[in-house]
Length: 321
View 1 (cartoon, rainbow, N blue to C red):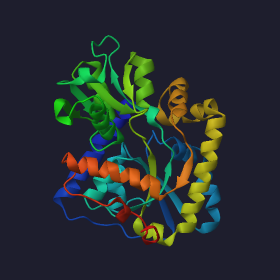
View 2 (view 1 turned 60 degrees about the vertical axis):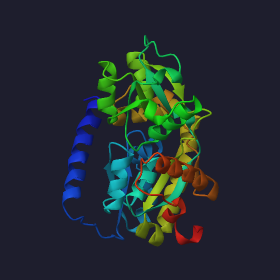
View 3 (view 1 turned 30 degrees about the vertical axis):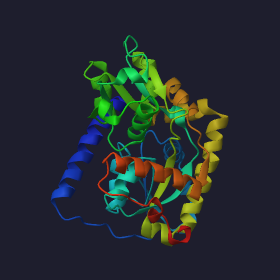
């Protein structure tokens, strides 16, 4: 089964679960000091490799913790998992936490990866007459609502003198967006890695514009608030392992791509190109990156994409406020 069909099935399952949660009272899972549940996505290269290598299990063996890995199709669904207490720790792009915080999700930022603006882009078919961002006016653009690419689209349009209302957003998860893109149901597709590289190499999609000079495209490590308060020791170990692995990936990207082939269901050349577009340098959360997140939050509120204004620093531990 291809990675795109896997994502379509996972997204459908996650959507049904989310719909059920909206019509029934939320049941929050209780904090379990003997269990660490890590949420990951196939595109989250560092966490995916940590899972594949079993590094976390080895490092936490003496902590009396059982490790459980939980896969999500995209960041918004992972944030829902954090909110209802089904995971303790996860990795997402910069936009999903904004939407989640505005919806009242109870999580905290604990770390981030340095910018990777080339790891997301607007794609068009190779033969498309669309040659510049200004040509997107009035066009149908596929994207995953609430993901990093949502902000990329907003800022790209702004840079080229267009408004968000000048285009027709079509909200689709990656697998469905790829299918719509291939059959011509949308004019352009805003997507992240490794889907970006897969479309370039498999169907000759053309990059119209990526995030360079427009957005940072940070990725964040988030934790359920109670877990973050009580298990700083575990978070420190997770960071140390993620940092070491990130450096290893940069030194031998080809080997890392080979390890991820089975997990992601993609050719190693696709994964290698995707990895080369990420920074993979891990840092603890700091005021500078939180200030950048606040700009996202303010932009989404101004566009009425989130229902209320938020203060990003409210989603940090008290010591940071």
